[in-house]
Image 1: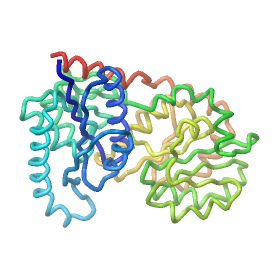
Image 2: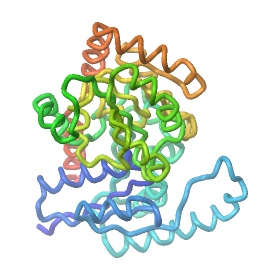
Image 3: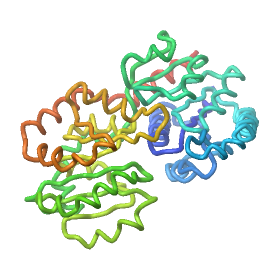
Length: 363
């Protein structure tokens, strides 16, 4: 039997790219001879991250609808037509046995053309509130792997499989890595550690919040691992001179960062939320309000409604000191949040998704 050809499309942010890579890695364990091809958006981070993971990638000339600069949308129809044509050529050449979409600009044209060519498609919806692309793709997808309940409002119920979101497998053992983590980050073992995460590119509002509260955090006798993101590192790296702060553009050893932390301040992207459920540490979510359908706020509210985290909206950041200090001093609350968020973890998500892939390949 000839090796399977697996086409995967997802990108724009780490939240779409890393699940796609995790799915590919798991498929490779099942089918070592399989051929893989990723499709991403030109000039986006997947064009760098996917080859680093050992996979080939083709780029489409595509971008999302601009909400702030409407004049940039004038060229969108041309980009869409170009991407549909390019995706069609890629599919004709690669001849995939299945097409998998994990979200992002490029997944729309890629899976639309795969559906037109009668190739089985599977989409992995990471959020509690789907974006418009996956809502459209869901009509023709064979399977829709989701991480939250009640998504039959958006997708045909007979196609939905609750699998969870793929996460890094090294997170499953972080509780045995605490000593290693504190050594790796050169931390004071007598102090509590705050981990600040703004996503791979960074989060301006979170960075500004931390910058304006550095003296406050020092007064709380905590140390800070601050992942400020690629876009902001040059602006904030100067704070590495402070004894209680270390600023990182990007953290490669996320398992150790999680292991070292006592409290986490984070955006509420789907992948981050899924990871934090497995990590099981007290979390203050500060969701980005600038994403499609405000899905980060909806993701955070899902956890908060189950008493698994604290939600602090960007327009409420003036209450940060009270919220943070209250949590820091209440170890019972920390324990409660840790236990409740951990109960929502779905650690077998990647293998669950790949089981659905295998069923489609067998058909």
